[in-house]
Length: 331
Image (tube, rainbow, N blue to C red; front, top):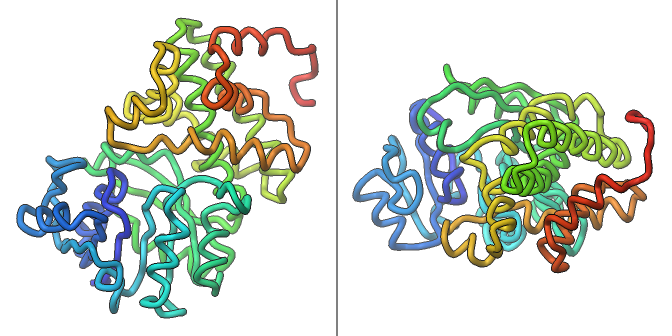
């Protein structure tokens, strides 16, 4: 039995705690709210997220120090905007040898770092750091429905450690050395999912949606390659796999946000209604900032940015895509 700290008690953190606890690992679950932690300990369920899912072998705390004290591994599942602060608060309590895997997805606005880059900056010792991404909707993983994912690290031993930690009869884990490719795919696919939500809500049809997803993958691949990643990663679970799931599933927060925007709703209304974070809302700015610095063309991501942050009308923005100059598909 391994003692694992899961840092973050949102939907994905709750699903991960259920998965690891279901394997017999001892889970220390950090919740920001003391009241949520108390309820989890009393009822073995999260009162705010996936409340019908049992959390076996799990104890909760609102103290970061207590959560990570003496654990064998740490799983970071906080929203990307809070990752640096959480890691900084956690750092004094963490051994430099403790393996850490991040499941948060995004690019930090101030630095342009991916989530693993943030952890490298705060915790150091990159040989014990990894990231995990794939088509893994929390609602399905928590119900032990079949899923697959990829864990990436610059250190193969670290990747294999987390592969063994997460592997379960219904959760298959592959390894990769392409950290930057996995992380950029994970961040950028959320932006494309918002665009597809807008496409669906406007009633543009399956052909348009399929074209959008395909061209979305093309612009993600351009960014990955420009930053030194492997284009094959974009065809894998963190790329194509997660893109399909996030763009097409009713579980997808980012797709739902895109639908709401077309209906006249706002990001603030979405977050107030769902009590969840749609990572693509921030990523459309941070990913396109990264693309601009590296001279990578990402028209779909730019469109989402214009609608969310610059007041563009979704219908007008969609028309601009069809008026773009003609080009070769593989250009």
